[in-house]
Length: 480
Ligand code: SF4
Image 1: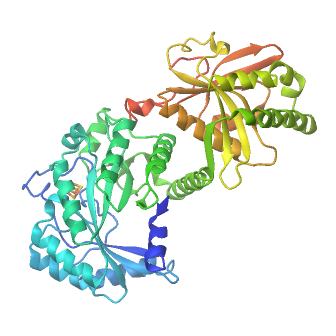
Image 2 (image 1 turned 180 degrees about the vertical axis):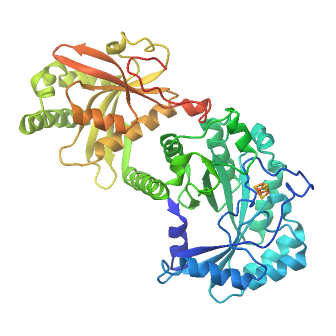
Image 3 (image 1 turned 45 degrees about the vertical axis):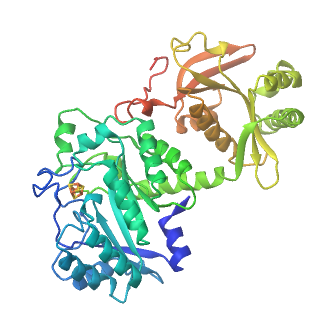
């Protein structure tokens, strides 16, 4: 994944800091041209809560610079016209404002946030001319490509307008960034992915992913107050984010991963107000994705079965060594001999994690589509799932188990499975904590010979219906 910082380092050889400016614009969705209430999620400041204000752009730039100066060692600056629709003004005014900003000696990039229906030919021509002085970025607020959502959020322009605008900007060599919102009411995970695919198909150079915020001074707040909508939990958001980031090709830069809501007007989700925690969680996720890219998740080959079996034997010895009583006391290698894995391989049920650099097999497991250990759980047959078994990771390869699990969940989603299910020994508290942190909830118990386990599951596809209306149930034994 390429972040905005990666892109800037590649292109400009340094980090660039955004100076949020306000050109004193309004918006056709507010002044009556297309509507009066604005987009349903938009705050009174026209999504420019953190922008400077005032008539003099040079002064705004200086003030904004002072805010970030302490962080900026050897970086540069982006003059970002953020508030409202920053091309919605007569051409002479735009020329004056943008020229002042782009010609400022400290500015490396001029970035303009706008609507695609506010880019007439003469404005595109102006941006093309400015782009010859310094790079111009245009940020388009698409938010969603789903027809019903477009109406719901009162965007007031059709997708075709966006398509034409991207093309016209590209014809002038202008870099395009598209904004999309994650968690719009009534949007499933598939809808969210479709918006991303739509943006990628239209060859947007960058994307900004924005978590849906409910702000007190937006119309969405009314819906929220009436209990009609919910926002995403942090776990839901990170899970969707992870799925989206996997789909974004390396050449498309991700300019934003959450977005900030103004703390003074933010109503929900409040977890997003803890900026430090959000940044840490997102950074962790990006790191995990970076790690994942070093491995391949695939079906096992015939000649790799002995490698997997050896991994299980090593794990049994390791359990002896560290004092864990599990496979080593339940005759695991006899209950599941090497022939068992070969039989499962022939059914296409054995998967491995291969290290890309050297082809090493570092983790393996059996993924079954049915599991009689689950017969006693009421919801067992009601949902499609993969059941994880015989899961082993190479000793000394820290973190590969988590990567295997994450990629196996992804594979399950691709195969249309609603749940990922597994079990862990009832006395293994460490494993219980591990799976709980990964979103697995206990739903029952199983006894298999000498083994007593807790059955756990994680819902994978809840966003297919509505990411904002569904939440995992926490009570053991309850069927979602
Ligand atoms: S989000 Fe943009 S287009 Fe929509 S009302 Fe706000 S300023 Fe206008």
